[in-house]
Image 1 (cartoon, rainbow, N blue to C red):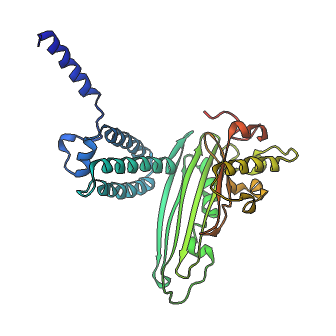
Image 2 (tube, rainbow, N blue to C red; image 1 turned 180 degrees about the horizontal axis):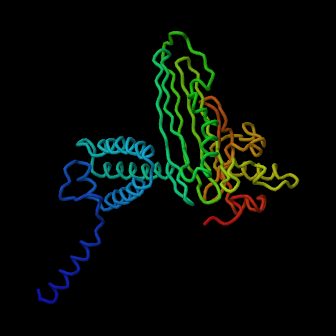
Length: 327
């Protein structure tokens, strides 16, 4: 092979090596089966590096309390990866398994931590165990950090709305046997749908199960108007034109029918949801009307009806936080 050709191939080889995605750690020191699997796949290496970069940003920005929650959840997540790289799992399945875990973890971090306009939403986590009545609570809820004048009202509203001082069991009013035959569990979590300089839109998820067969679940929205420094209401958002409720409900039901998951949705839902402050979620692309979102049996029916902003725009007040284009 001519010398000039060897030199060209050598340079190309260096370029290829330099362009190969690298994970967040040194593959030469990869000791675990998980690390070796990540190093063997460019897609996994990219996911690992990107997640590590995201994690490092959060590590620098969070308060000590928020960081403690993040560290605990990160340790649990890191340990969960081992099931993807056991000897019994074929390589291709292991790659798919890890890819899914990394994607889910990225989504989890985006759902729990956001920063905008000098403010940060981060998570808190508390657990309670009441041995005498065999009750367990797992509670994850948001707090807003920043200048006191801008965050106190939001945090008070969250505390009051979620009954944080009481806890989920005490707030539920459920009466248990003196010596219950089984466990009762409560779980709460949240997801940030939108956070910018105008508003915060958060979805709260709550579930309860008990030994006597009773169980419920609910999802509802907490929307905050950052300019008014108070809860955002339906009356702040939509124009009070004739038949606006029927028009918005028709849009939501059209979306539900197109999803095709619920037979005869008209028998399950009604237009009252349009007037419910708790039923509207907002993200960067549009609104979501939560139908059947309130406390209900585990076998109840619910639906998320998305409505894009360009469709919703004619019904929005000019001063509504989502009326202007999203940055």
